Image 1: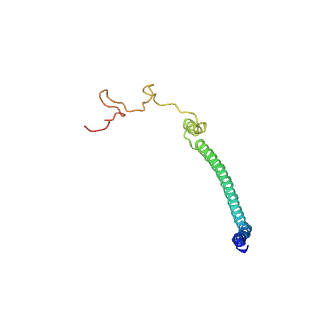
Image 2: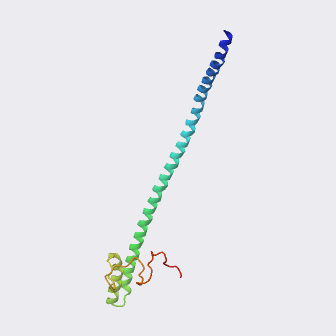
Image 3: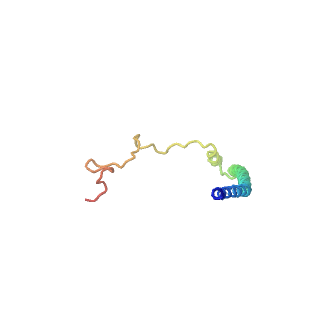
Length: 144
């Protein structure tokens, strides 16, 4: 009977030892992995929060600078208007200077100086002579 017990006893002991080792490894290793993952997650969250703060700061600074730029532009316009009023030699020159200053504010569309030569739409291909090959021809551009 001892001989029949030995072939079963050794694999059973090995199985129990494997289960015990596996249980210990499973209990010890996952505890290290979630801690590392949590640290990485916390680090990513901190980097994301920092990035969001930088974006908010950037756009607040941009808005402030645009406000200053608009105020400076208005001050320059007022200065030029006052200069045109004080320094113009005559009334006609003063009116023309003021009109030129305020014409940029209205952003009115300008008229064309010369009308188009024809009402035909522009062509999106190269014109060719009747006896020449077209640009899609196999022999186009080849020297004979």
